[in-house]
Length: 435
Image 1: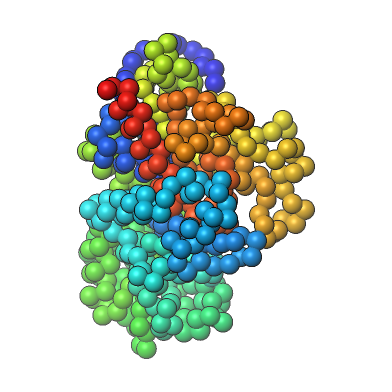
Image 2: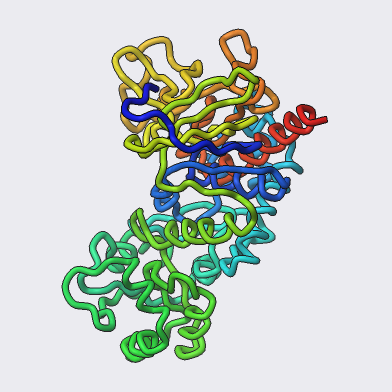
């Protein structure tokens, strides 16, 4: 990428540069901090605002059969046997377990614990009235998985002025699988006109607002075993908000994800933004990388925005976590699909006509969804001959080839596991460099 305007005016240096702030980028920064690496992270943090807060490991395999996976660990083992080029296959099961548990421990100590089931995957409601298979759920959603498993009678609540979320629609969509759902629409405390989930969540951090909500809910609780609300149970005090509501109502209270971007993603964003700097990561959030090149000493030189006063970063190694088309890690045009920062080779169908099947809802998924950057066993991007393009460049997350995270329901797991593998490889490279 070319940079116009002034030359970089401020130099920074680090051992490791993390490029990206989606789940893979945030997880990579966490793992780098745990490795004690001098790390700078660059990216636009709006990406993780689209996260559901759920940690999916593997929900469907094989995709063509639409077969649900109950035990994600057994499912990953089968996936790696059936698809040896899938990014999961670059890691053993215990390494993936370690990566996921490290992140879950981080959430726990940060006050936003996630719950897992001894039986494996859990199922939670979605805002469109379907069920989603996932591995770990925020503590605010745990009672929903419990109530679903028991088919317990639940009150589903929405609010006047909240767009894109309907308790009636959710109940109707699940009527044949969970008939004991009763929808109700209330007025949110102090709410007038159009509502926004972020404002609602921040409002519920206040005890007085929670009490008003309790008073509005009480007349509708007869015969109910739990209460389901849109994901607005606080921003910073989710444990306190949920515990207070449950104590006042005498019933379990749970969240249902809303349409993205939602509070669940904002919570993760603010959690990472607050905790990572305290762990030693130097964030340059709301900046983007404008250019990257090899330095004469074998390291990497990056130029980052803003363009009117660009800054230059020298790094010994880098982890690329820029995502796919939405994150602008990949770009498609009439000539094909390209990686936007380093110009890395992209594994892709032979021509545009092969990108998609004729059937929009083809059960196999579309070939373009598996396009991406190929990596070796150390998560270094490789060329057509399988040789590393750069010995100090690593990649993680959805930019990797040979996976369809949307259909396989493995987005967070893929991001976390490959970020762990990429950072471990980068740490080994740096150790050799300095030894």
